[in-house]
Length: 391
Figure 1: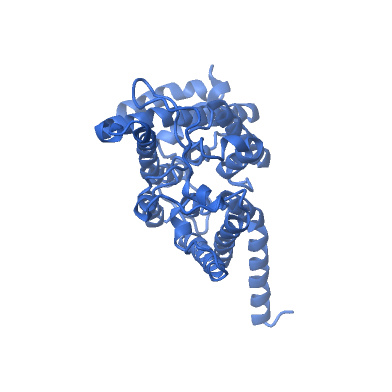
Figure 2: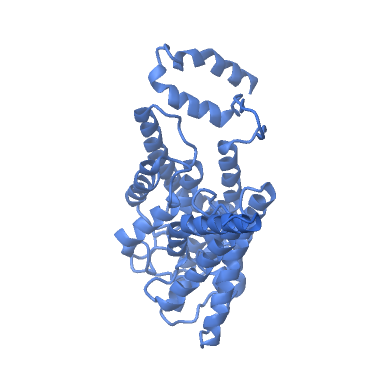
């Protein structure tokens, strides 16, 4: 690492004012600050926090928290492929090794991660160069979340369009990271759902249809694999066991199926203090309350079933807690989280055409977050004025 630091110090003058590569200063700065914490600290008087944590380090920690969900998602993609083939040719799954199953999923998911980062970061780099600003690091997280919340059957060109849409229209036009109203990953998912609904819903998008480099098997074009939520939306009792739903061995978006993997990520985010436990807890409370209400009206799904199906848990842990697009006030975080959890269940139960509901709920939660914070702050100001005897 010292040799790398020395090399960066040696070439850095070329990218500074007057250097022959000054036009690419923002790109160099982006790589340097990603590898090393900047030496700059606050110089003004008053209360300041001086530590080695900056936004790039925070984003990197979120990426680490996403690793369990991503790795399990890769394995589940391969598992679903071999399981589907096992239905057609019994004994296929039993004959496949863990390495074969995981490699199949790894090779199927990796192109989506690469496309997401190449398109998203490419636009971020180009935008920074055009504006003469520093490269912002928010896409480090969005770039890995977007591939994890889409079906494995989503075409790469479609994913590229969604990434470009989310970066340009949901981040950069608002001023970049920290200024955006909507979560870019949620925006990408919403774009895909409304622009290409046939590629985001249905029974054929959750299992990879082709073999990859000799791994896995080609499946018939008409092969279907319904998610538990999709079956419920059709009025069918899910055929997956509760154990499989919790562990994640079910068809679904790449990173959303395993409750265990998501729980590990939640522990990392809460332990490091990056995510708000108030928001996270309130999402589950809001979902449980509304699910219990609907259960009393005759719905056959118990409240905890909603947590192990679809993207409810993933959205609550990794997306609703986004510090930029969620509420900042303490009371607002409770309201914001409850609103998202409740809205997700309402959409799931009352709209059979859109059984997921979580991403749309987070989208609306992002929309109302500034308003919630505004009223909380105004209420606090009013209470303090009254306490001080000021009208």
